[in-house]
Length: 278
Image (cartoon, rainbow, N blue to C red):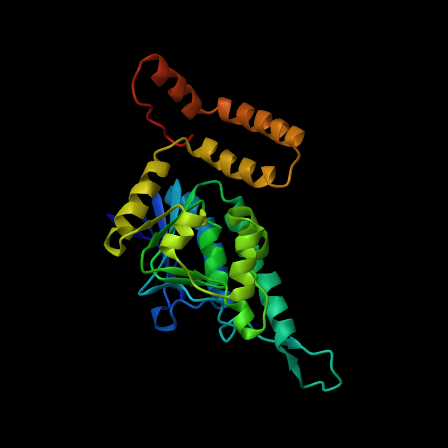
């Protein structure tokens, strides 16, 4: 049974089905365009996951879109004062800077630091900050009708939400340049072929397959999975020697967990391990 979270949100829904929590972006009339408030609410929802007993998280969108990009007309997007001579003037650029540094960016960092695995179920367009949100997840499962789009060049802006960091690491510089400088749609099938996402599936299979993957992850050794997330993130910036040291530290932590003891015992007894997330 799906249990609603105790706190009501205006731009999303948070629910859980056993150890799998789901954040559903819920502005279908705007193709789930994300005002700063939505990212603030995602951040708040992440803080509620421990109380829900969540051991995996799914992020998806309501309706026919995952997230069509930022919506700077919403709450939390007040433009900053312009440094021009006109005291009544406002700067769109300064307003975007404020939204990115005070709302979108902190939430993206919180996702990166989360200690449980994340699955994005991309049910439609994932554009701009929506593309960044999807690609920040550990696994991206996309409906075949979905597509990914870095549309900033079409409106005279630059990619954000960590896109310039993520894209070359996911698909290499040449394809990152193609996505950012040409601003063309990348279909789900092409995204899978590029290695941008985990899997493209038939539309009807999106929710079942994304949930099955999340349930598999939720049944795993949660603390070890969280350490893997952090180790992978650090390794992208570390030297080989530093990565080896991080692995040793994380192995020391994981080795003292109940799940590690269960894993060793199950191996000796030639049975499947039953992990509790501790």
